[in-house]
Length: 252
Length: 174
Image: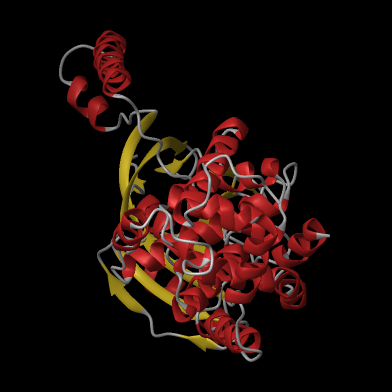
């Protein structure tokens, strides 16, 4: 019976000679039309049990109360309280973001640059912040394989250039490096300022750069430059945009 | 070999993907055709399987054999296509037909039809084992079940086949 079964299965599973190339053509067309590369891991939030969630909520509340008491005690008494409270930022916080239509909870870490007087929160699970030549660069924690273009968000201060002047200069500089430089736009989201986008093609690995320029409130500006590639438009780009929403210039 | 192809695929090498396709297409197509019982659905399942293998090859654990990983994707795609087409396997009707005529001789009930009339629980392990001569251990890995569970399903599957063919439950295995 087993021998017969094997023969019958072989016979019944026969397919046309053209099938293999037909499916390959469909595959190639799909790969060409929607350029895909082996995807970069995208960490999903693990589902936790109700019991664990409850424990976490209690722990979070207790920690928050203790932290608040600590902060209160450490603060100067009287009228200075409100001023100091305004300039206080939680060292870490949870932020919900939407990636490719799915909501995701991320753990964000505070970065306070005392010299340039600004703060930003970044996703500490996926990115690291390094300081290079006076700039703060947020980039992937794990280096990407060589074939991937740079993925980073760089924050740099230009003390002597007003936003209008800086965006003009940066936009002009892009023209020599990118094939498609878009018009400068005035924006209010993810931050107040100006934006210019530039692309180097439409392939999966085509470089994309998005520069935001914000006022530093001291006659100067901040340039916040996102670099990623076409395929990462829904991933890294969305994460960077969320981080930019948390960007705050500090009062002197 | 598969590991080398996957390493190259991670660098975006389409030729490596083609080599993997050449190696696995026949197995995949035959399996999909038997599992879905439909040539067009099988094509859809195979196409989607290779696409997923290409997109998700970074997820493949290189310390484990490739075949079970590949087949688990293939089977999932087969089920997905079958669900999409709202094709409920008509095994109930065929089982009934076989059931009321338990003494049918081998010549009147086809072995293949009897197999395809069985529940997926027994049908799929038998297809994987007999179509490609995979070992029970390999089939257990593909289906992600315990080896003893797989053995039990194969045994029951064979018994059901014999019953379906009107043969003796304790008939000899050829």
